[in-house]
Image (tube, rainbow, N blue to C red; front, side, top):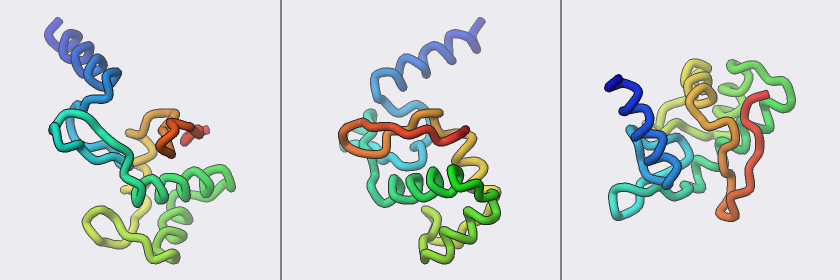
Length: 108
């Protein structure tokens, strides 16, 4: 019962655009400490992942492509397939990719 209430409360926060847990990849917390805004450097990486997925790249090939482009993780390290799998697993199915709120499917 407590778990169901907690899940419902977190869903409600996310529906209002408020942070619920850690910052999702591609977003940063606003100055109010509660709401999120798109973070363009990570949104560009998400766009690359979307394009790679659509082209049939494996997770390892996606990591190689990001590294080839000189892009690094939040921690400034090279990309590994495990991190990409986690990002794709935890992203919403339709992640906004620009300020207009336009979306593209991350996972097929």
